[in-house]
Length: 356
Ligand SMILES: Nc1ncnc2c1ncn2[C@@H]1O[C@H](COP(=O)(O)OP(=O)(O)OP(=O)(O)O)[C@@H](O)[C@H]1O
Ligand SMILES: [Mg+2]
Image (cartoon, rainbow, N blue to C red):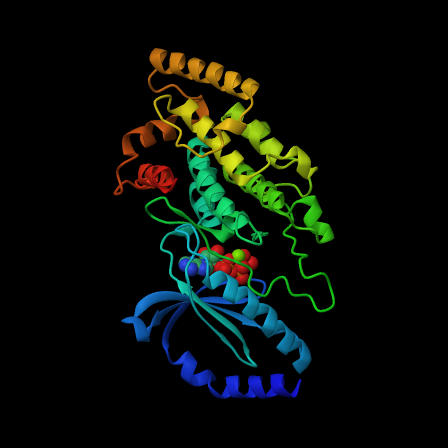
């Protein structure tokens, strides 16, 4: 305890010099735990960065010191992560005032902001976003021990101008509850039932992914603890996507798909129905796909090919305008709106194939 108090004292003395490492530009977000600022790193040629300040609510020194330990453990873990879909951590600092986490600045907008500006997104855009989320989740879930993200929702995902999706908020310090189960983090609508009882597991992230996709497709926040049926609110949602989201948000985790990789495979199949010429990259799970699923997919694909032959621009009416635009703009970085934001999607898919 004495050592912890001394540690805090030294930290607070070095506070102002640490803050001086940065030009603090402007606040860009306000969350439940603190504030997020855009800044420049003076030690790195004024490179833009983002500093998240988390203020301590615990008055006594013992709780603060314990919270610092929890945060440090989590920061150490995050420092080791290396994935293009995860924000890079640059620095952290602890003091009596609070905790600071410095990370790379991700240009673009978070998906909640995108939705507020553009309205609900079309099936194709949501599939592309979902595919990228699965890649990050698979990476996290395959870590030893598995890392469970626990807070997947539109405001925690940045959409960069080139269409790449980046997870930004690793809820540092969030899973700290003095004397309570350290894993209880709940965001109404996105959290799976099991998270309410403090038992997170990888398939909980799949539930949140389903709830997030539902929100993106409909513009309507998912109802807490209720399986999502986006097609009931937006008739333009592809039936296969609706069915997958329903399965993802199943109350019982055993009824959800088994892994993020399996969801990614399903999403690639849906993408292939939209673009019959698209080749699904080898995800290494082909052998696990049951024969019935394979046959169903072949039927759907044959149907999609027929449709494309009859009507090269064929898609449901509701989504037609946007899909038309996207067909033309898939490789055009300059085009406006979300539909034009996927210039690097093909490169992203190629990269998946290259990694295996
Ligand atoms: N690295 C970053 N690059 C660009 N913008 C960021 C970055 N980190 C955070 N932001 C912006 O700040 C907002 C809030 O950040 P974050 O989600 O980390 O904080 P929060 O306190 O958890 O907020 P909330 O409770 O709303 O999730 C994000 O939605 C995003 O718009
Ligand atoms: Mg957040």
